Image 1 (spheres, rainbow, N blue to C red):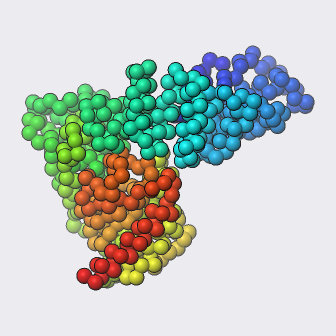
Image 2 (image 1 turned 90 degrees about the horizontal axis):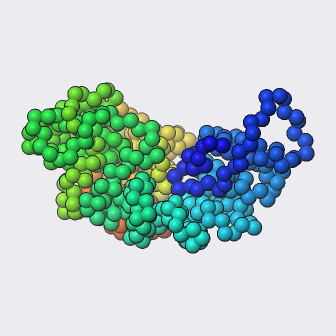
Image 3 (image 1 turned 45 degrees about the vertical axis):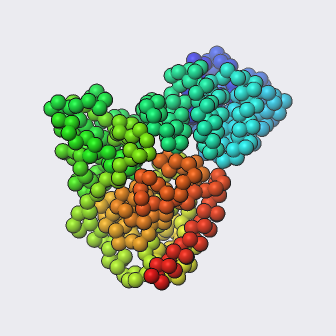
Length: 493
């Protein structure tokens, strides 16, 4: 088999073993499968492995099960079945498979590393770190094992220790893409806005997970020099939230002696049309206008931020006349009640959404507070939960009336509080100065730093952090207690 066994694997997974190559099967009809022979098992393993490389996860699972039906102790099949389960987002089943792969082969560093990754996915960090440490003790010069150990430390809330591991990895392999990126996240989370941290942040463009991303331009990257009559294209690169977050840096581009074009998502265009710092607005759905230099919008941070003191205020957004026309009457109907907007999930296409999102039913406890009216701001596939739960009139739907972020912004301005799990609406509310309580997971977005319950990026934001990985119960209980006190104080006032 000519393909590298790591080519198909998701980030942070090491292969269990390379399946031996066999001569191509003859084109004559295969004999019926009767009693299992060694060549049958090898062929099934090879077929499963090929399906695994092609992301045919169900097909690979079926083939590995077939091998295990014939050879219940086949460690290669158990280990690779674990890889498939993890890629299918079933880390609990992956753990069980890796444990079977280790039976009789307890010192297999690759399996131990994979076991550590699966424990990490389950946020069982003590077990994850123990498995990684065992793996590294067996193979201390493995860049992959060391990197995975650093990731477990980082996601387990130990960025200082993680960064030391990443430094070691980069001493061994200075061009290790994922390590540069993961070290950047550790540094930024710690408030280290050094040149090295921002240089690491630029390695995001080489990440395998961005392999399908196509930049809208091949123009040279702008390095901060005067434009001298040239045109600079600043373009959105990630989600809506990141665009809203980074808009604050556009005014820093004044005085460059040239033209600045902002190219952003169409759903933001009405909202950002009066933001300072650019001369022309273009849609990300259309080809980029003529320009000489270019910069992805999140790279503005590295140009202008050397410490927390350098953080500029949020961009001043404009809400056009007529925005929110369908939502505003529903808000007004609540009269003098304390009006709270809720969001329980960000974009389902975001890889980390599974840890930051919750289900709508968790928010129903806030409806118990006297004098409160909840409004759903949710859009996208998670809104199906609203339809299934049917919480009206306890929760009034606004999100389905929004055509773009200008409509959302108009509704937010009429609310007393936004109470949500982290997503783009948090950036919008924070930019508008609307009071927002952001319920965030244990290993949250780096912009929220460590151990803070406020945000230097958004003065109107309060953070409710998980104190233990995966523990949303405590977060919602704390928020509910504080909400009852806050609403009572407001009503007395």
